[in-house]
Image 1: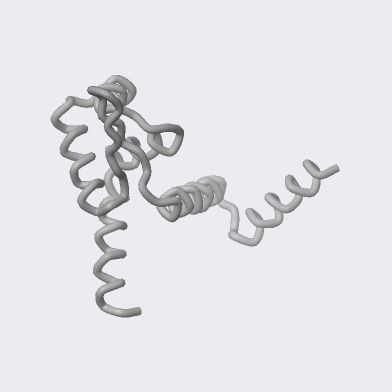
Image 2: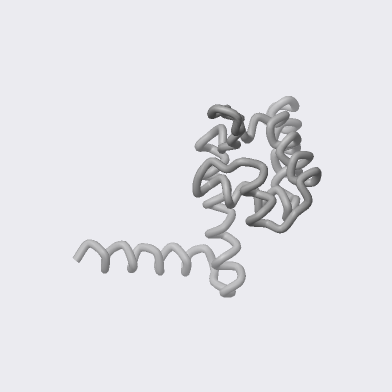
Length: 116
């Protein structure tokens, strides 16, 4: 792995290492949100939300869209969504004390059942 790629990955993983930022990203995974919506949903101070959003913007994880007088934040890249989803699936099977192979087999069985 190239050094510059390693460096950028470390930045992303450090950002994702914060429960506050993960909570914000979980909201933005569902839909774009304003700062006030994030404050209300997460019961965080406005200054703390703004600080976390600034860090996510600097890393190009989220973008801003102005609609009239309102400012909405949204995920900038589907790769971040994929990364979050994969990490969530991993944690799910770890918490259920399943091996990766068991989790994959379970998911395949669900998919097969849904197709029938």
